[in-house]
Length: 58
Image (tube, rainbow, N blue to C red):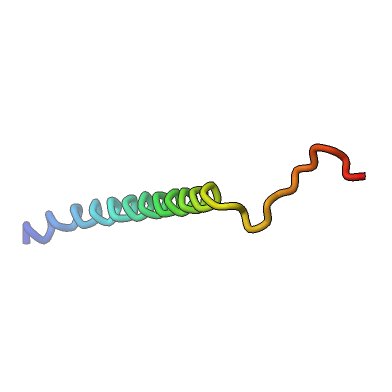
């Protein structure tokens, strides 16, 4: 019985740690996706390049 009672708190701690780890992994996935998008657009021209008018067209 002592092993079962001592296992309950540790399982709660493990659940909390797993929640935190999942949140950190989700954040790192978002950061990775943003980095991939930035590298993709930095390395290649944009599908529709923004037009910058230095002089009035008329």
